[in-house]
Amino acid sequence: MDWSKTKTMFILVFLILDIFLAFQLYHKYMKNQLEVLDNPTTGVQSLKAANITYDELPKGKTKKPYISASEKTFTEKDTKKLVGQHVEIINHKKLISTFNKPIKLGKKIEAGQLETVVEKNILFGDHYKFWNYDKQLNQVIFYQTYEGSMIFNNKSARLTVYLDDKNEIVSYDQQYLSDITKYKKEEETLSATKALEALYKKGMLKPNSKVAGVELGYYTRVPELQVLVPTWHFVVKHDDETDHLFVNAFEGQVNQLDNDE
Image (cartoon, rainbow, N blue to C red; front, side, top):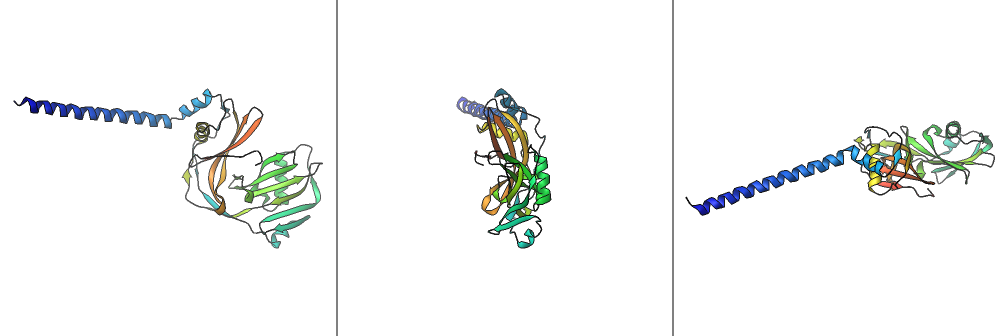
């Protein structure tokens, strides 16, 4: 028996066995890591540990498409539909209108009441949804919707209503997106929980924050072409501050409105 050859054979066998065991260990480790990432309870536990609270989030995933649109060109034919108003068209893309008689509101500004007034008195009024009332400026912002989902922070889809010191609507300016089409086939979105986890992982959520609102809408991905992507909107309160945070529902990218916006 050639002991030298036998020893070499044993060394090779044990080397192969070590490589196999190392590969198995690495594979098991990576599998565990993926399970941790895919486990929704992991992110939830991190949020709880930071005392980030929220009401019940929308459950599950949904399918949404990219959409594309173009800015509407307003014409005199459009303005003739508006009764009891003095209307101007600016650069073909914006309507500026003043009511002949201010529209009275109650003492309290309510979103539902404002949306009803907009629906009855403004072109495509039923396509707009209340966004914000600025008491200091005495104006109300609405954004256009697509299939019931809001198009966030898009000036070409914005309606601004102006009030006087009696809480009466006196005028407005309007822009509108038309020819909205599905740009690509529908894709599965991130769940609201995963989107919230993305905010936390990127340091956008402060400890002891409260998520006061969440909805799925659209955010402009390519402004020059008006290509919009499904996006989660979170209203987050911390102390006396309120942040509006947006998470791309396909890719997890984060956007934030500044105070002026």
